[in-house]
Image 1 (tube, rainbow over the protein chains, first blue to last red):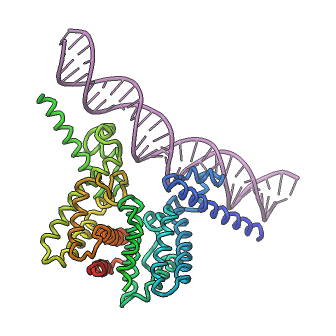
Image 2 (cartoon, chains in turn brown, red, green, cyan):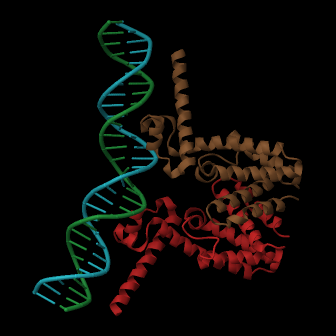
Length: 189
Length: 189
DNA sequence: CATGAGATTCTAGCAACGCTAGAGAGGATC
DNA sequence: GATCCTCTCTAGCGTTGCTAGAATCTCATG
């Protein structure tokens, strides 16, 4: 029994290693640099081992994205709780979201632009994802008139659009903060 | 002299063919299906011919994107001009933008998410791109207080976020119209 | 202690990708 | 008619994600 347990423990540890290696490599050199060969080399096993843990590269990216959702939820929660008041909460949460995306672009991509296999706007979506969106919803509660869910989705989309277009060079970078402030202002009534 | 002219004409025609084939294939099966081999087969020439016209696959995508900008500008212009009034113009232009993105997702991707080589928010950006953004700017003129440029960028980002997150299954599809209306409403004062 | 079964991991390779070097064919020029 | 030059093709390089089948290692059983 104990042997089996040790095996499973080691196996879980190796899986953790794969996800960590993928994330590190992606954050350092972008997702294009994350190849199965480099991952295998990093964990000091051969390529096929990856496929005994994950169905493919997409599944590894999804695992990285899942980590990201949990961290995003935590960051948003901290921002909301440390806000000076309910009105400030929205601005602080939005700023935390923007900072998260700016500091971990590769992670953000895995979460919101690349992987499509994860269920999103449905009850089957991962708990961490629900938690992250819930933080945004709570931050918007004080400024919501009726349909909180739709309002939160729309504001989130605005944030997401600003950050992705900004990062891809589609917007004047010197106006970034002004646009963020403008968006928040438009959703603060 | 005439021979040289015919040559150049035929060459330009072949270049047009390449772009058209890339666009068709992308719209039918997505950009992943657009390979240099399939493109070569479609135009009935060998692969290296593509590289005598374009520096690589990215350049072909950029050419397709350029077509898209022109068409988007035209669509937005039509929407703005046929609007019943200056207040309705913003809603109509936004609706036209959303329809464009929904009907030609691959084209939209080439324009706004994939290719990064094109200059964007700068004077060097292609004329068609300036024209398209200018339509949005004009539609927002009546509702702008002071900084029209930043306002237009922010509203555009909101639209872009809604459409991309929607298309990738990140938002509840049944609420799409409601979110669009909400965004427009928030930017209509 | 030896052996066979079962799980685990590796080597080697497939098909497809973007892209390119160098050979060959064709028409224009002297 | 020989020579050049432009154009196009065949063939191939290095890389990708992924997989089949051989090899190795572990462990319970005779």
